[in-house]
Length: 247
Image (cartoon, rainbow, N blue to C red; front, side, top):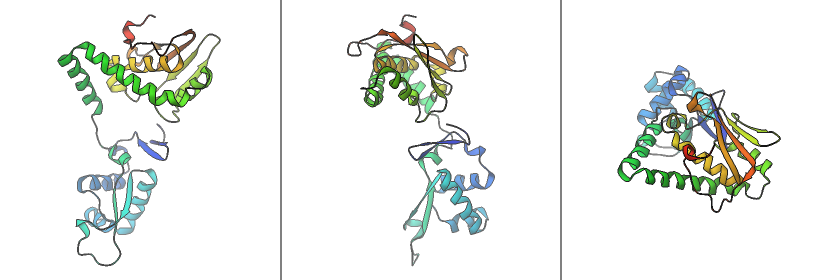
């Protein structure tokens, strides 16, 4: 996800910009929608001291970019209005994500709380459950494919049409190279989270997978080596923390 500041996931925009990186006029409109909720062109123009046409043009661009959405109807803002219902503009889900979020901090707190309250084994069980969910959702898409085709399909492991994931074949194995970890902030502070990817890929591919390069080690990427000559039985494979896996 991606120049010029977004990527498309099945028609949905996924933000990597922040609100402060947008042009002033669009930023002002988005901030107004965030602060006051759905509203009309007229009310935005009045609040921002702009012409209605200027606001309309900016809203059209914001809508094309996927940051806002429009709907027609009456609500409390428009009570007493007669005639055709006004069009109301509001932030889309992607637009809301332009504003600061702290999911990574919450995830770290939750991981630590589970360990402190219930013990390290409970943390492992939670990570194992997340692994199984990943295997179920992604594995179903590639279950009947031969290994080389599974490798190519799972270029989308983190993101649909991920331009930063590369699949590389060699004589003895395959490699998945990820240059943009979407969980970077959390994974850097709690690397046990990466055990989910290693275990899930192992079960889906049916061969052992090891991570040879890591963002945590300053490699600037994660490199998953798929050992095609080391088969495993997915039905009996048990979740193992990456730190405890054989090299």
